[in-house]
Length: 467
Ligand code: GLN
Image (cartoon, rainbow, N blue to C red):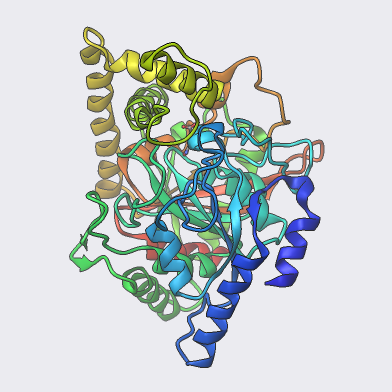
């Protein structure tokens, strides 16, 4: 724990951590020692991890990378935090991210941009940019992240590490600062699929304190061991199949994922990865997800709508920043919010309140809900008729330069095209490293593997074959 803390301090240039606290870390290391001494250790005992700063923690500040919550300390721990702690993982602290998890480049943090460990001039991705950067720089073995529209998969891809977002409802959202509640799902980031398995299995499980937490997943109880059980079953089948372990596996590659917007180096790396799976016995089938492009406007109506509602609690009264000068109560609230929220958060609130307002609700919000259902149905049709898993890129290109999209905030929104549909459908999906960009920009490229509901174990077993 001490050497991990030292390494984290040495790499302060990355700006991956928002808070480190030696005493708190050492106290957890003592707990880990106790678990080891009493024979109650798990695979995660003593392992250095860190949490995205949207998981509330009793002892560290939790800021959501916002000035609004700059000094906030929660009276309780998020379920994810307490589960990992109970398993003996040692958290070094809290990780930088986009403000309230809104963004794709970690440039929307009130506490500064995070740098990509592969190239200090490149973004690490977002919104879980600090999480991916900390794992890529080997400051921690694993980090927690959250994925509302891609924020676990995309930074993992751009930093050359692995990440998984499980089926919506698998991991408790209790104590996870809300962005778009019908989309928000936690997920771990680590180097390899096997590590993700240990983490995901520990983090998942029914939680009565989250009303959307699932008790039963596809007939099995949503308890620790469920995902591992699926993983072991798939691995057994693979082993029985000998030198063609993936024989019978149909990999659907959506034609819409290989469209004009995809950079040639990313397309080539994804093609090569699919070929590797074919050499292991899998069969490639071309499929269609016809509403892929529609996932962008659909998501960017629904997510801001939910965000505008979730963020209404920051009123300068109950939580967070309060303006110093105001005439009356209304001005106190408006000033506190204007001062406390950054520009991207304010933009989302404006979009969200607009699409929910009387006269526009039917045209935007309700319509987006209808398209959301169609997008989910498209995935179900693909799984029912054509394939077992879906593969494709995570991002249209490798990590861009810091500052590139400053003038056009919606440019980043468009780059989310391959991750948003999965989130709208609530499906599990992961990202694993599959190569590097062109010699001009040799940065990491991620392969996205998408499964049907509750097939996290299958995804991890397939990824493990590749790694
Ligand atoms: N880039 C997307 C957004 O800004 C996704 C973020 C996320 O998954 N938290 O909303």
